[in-house]
Length: 178
Image (cartoon, rainbow, N blue to C red; front, side, top):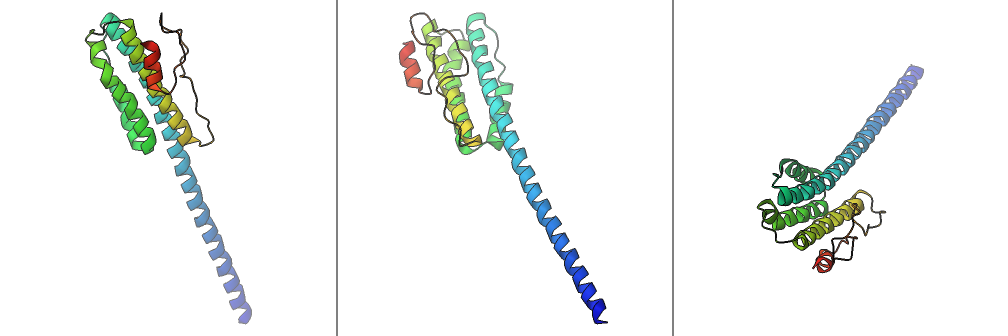
């Protein structure tokens, strides 16, 4: 009889250890999968902000020059997504881009902007806000990333401005364009 108890206790102990291992492993795997899913969603949301902010910037230029309408829906969807999955710092950086759009959009949509220099100042602030967003997002996704010092769009300077590099300092861009 003692042999049967020893076998039973050993078997039950082995089954319990196996079940504990399986449950622990599945919990860890589930947590890791959620973390990967969340990170992927954050990267997708950040990419959408960069893409949509570029699209809105170009649409504002077309609105000013040609009277085209600006479709704000994709931009607002991208903002909503970043609010859902982004960190507070990333959401704040996206909000700064939106603030710049609000600051300048009426004069371009209503075609009341006075000159290319006005566009240049607005463009520089839009690109500086986008660069600040990119650097904030890069740091959030991977703290090992070093900040970028140039916007992702290389372009020639406006006549008389002398610079084509957009820094993360909107005041520097505005001073150069003035």
